[in-house]
Amino acid sequence: IGSFGAGQWRPLSLDPAALTPGACYILARATPLRDHAELRSDSPPGASIPADATIRIVRQIEKGGRPWYRVQVIAPAEHSAEGWVSSADLTDQELEIAR
Image 1: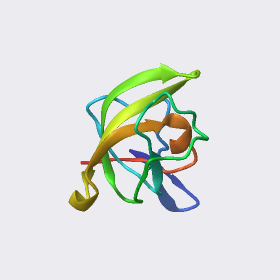
Image 2 (image 1 turned 90 degrees about the vertical axis):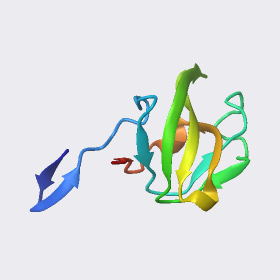
Image 3 (image 1 turned 180 degrees about the vertical axis):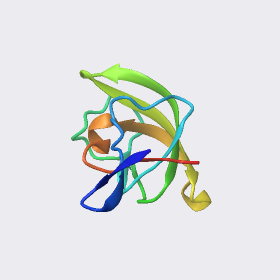
Image 4 (image 1 turned 60 degrees about the vertical axis):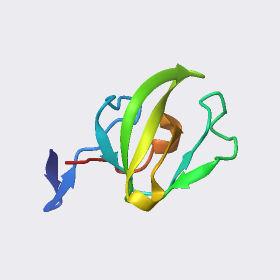
């Protein structure tokens, strides 16, 4: 899904506050992975998910007025992990739906 702009195909931007549990997404840049959703977005992350990694949304909760996602990092295999990602950390990056 996308559109043409200035003669180039561009994917439609996904809303990081409206990701679907069970769906998989590819991250455009490194993203903090936290052990607990109780941490604020400005707390130091426990780890970082690398750019181009694929994540699966396990569940979503609301914390501090924004969605937090429990995710599984499923690719690349050497970075497999599970933790929490704030929707604020997904803002301003092009998320892709993984096929």
